[in-house]
Length: 127
Image 1 (tube, rainbow, N blue to C red):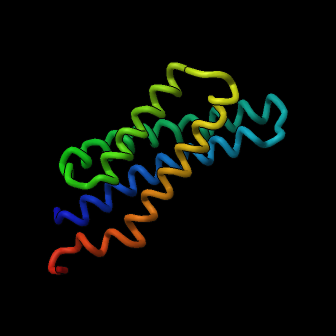
Image 2: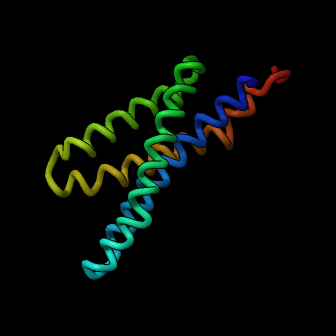
């Protein structure tokens, strides 16, 4: 696999994870009754979160392969910190509700810089 294609795949993996965090945060902000929220959580959020965990794993593996890219290293560290915070339920409820939003925004911003600017520098044959 060419270097830029592997990097693209890694950034897409992290972008999926960040977008999932933003989507779950957005669903949590909707005024839903208990039954609807439980159904959406079971049918939408759990499979989406499972897929995001798999995507983060793939992103981390590709980060190890392309270890010279600072953006991938940052995304891997942020993803690890986000998952530790999520599973440990660290912090007050306000912190727990803001961390997915901050994680999602930073991930989308870093991935955006890759696809809109920095990717052109890493294309083979470009000097």
